[in-house]
Image 1 (cartoon, each protein chain N blue to C red):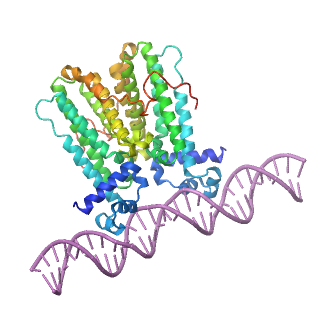
Image 2 (cartoon, each protein chain N blue to C red):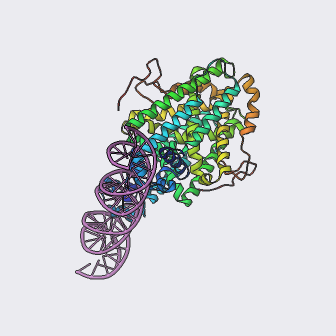
Image 3 (cartoon, rainbow over the protein chains, first blue to last red):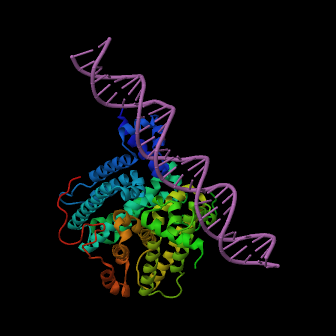
Length: 234
Length: 234
DNA sequence: TGACCTCTAGAGTAATTACTCTAAAAATCC
DNA sequence: GGATTTTTAGAGTAATTACTCTAGAGGTCA
């Protein structure tokens, strides 16, 4: 039996991701766990502490997916990175939507978050540079930096955006995964112009793997194909 | 003297952008205006109605910046579009951060927002296609579509993200404008690989115009320059 | 058994906040 | 100028919600 503290974080993360942190009260979390509010507050001083703990967890998870590159990087390494990071960002998707509110009020947390963003982007840049050294990418330093920023922003924003438009995804595992897949696809497209050599050879396959053609899924665009959404009442 | 309804929206927008919708109560808005809460609720049924009205306003503003392309498009047209849209998105920056919460609760508003995103992206795609027809851009249909999605996501997310990391921007006009400028820069870099002809000739100038070199500004990266952060453990 | 510590229950509270209600002022109309 | 409608004030309320407090259960070690 895992510790109560861990279980609180687990269910809090789940509820936050599904309904948004703002709609989830500490009493909800306790109730979902079958524990008392008092017990919850025994483990966490306040709601912010829960969010902060979830952020720490999230950061560590991302960090494990961004080891400093050692030796020559392959295209497979890159895809490995990409999937791992997106997966982690997906799991912590509520954070990028609701964390700003806490950053606003908690300078310490904000400092940590800023550091996290800077470190992550620095580490990501190293990976891109490694790929360039391996001849898989061709870009100037400035272009690489801009690419890194765009990749980061896209990766961070994608989950929150798509879930805002598609709340049904919270209850629909298939839709949820489709959204994640399209996020990866978008990042692949972002990098595409800079790819060279072996990476370029794999590009079409990568696109095909992550392209979402499912017309039942209404993502950002109206479903591809001739049918543009009929009226759909909610 | 402008109507009370309009003034409510104006100050609400200002306060929302500065402090985040969540931290701004209806009483705050009334107080900032020097009117009574009762008066505010005479004009707007509830807080959601205010947000919804701000969204309508925002949508119209964006829409005015995205006229359907007629005839051949020039690179100047494109930059005109870009600046106008980013400016509008900047003015409604709180929306992209706080709207999801209301979308979650108000299916009608969500339908409108979804429609807005789809229409906007469709219209944007037409513009890109116009640029392609003018020989300023070279890309496949699929690439163009992916580019459009990435542009949209970036444009929508940029204000919220950078303000989350840099809350000081709310009180600092200079910093605020610098963040907006860098947002435009990032989008220019996003499009850069697809540019051709005259657009390509202007690329360097565009980058130079919007590049933010101010080292006093701490945006996403650590300040540009040779000093890259030492090792920092998490 | 008893002392001690960790963990839990659950009723309760203080503060916030979106929103209401009544009455009166201001504008408009005839 | 009186009647009617629109707009405003401002005190007040109901509901939410983060968080507290006390008491006690359960485990461990002597």
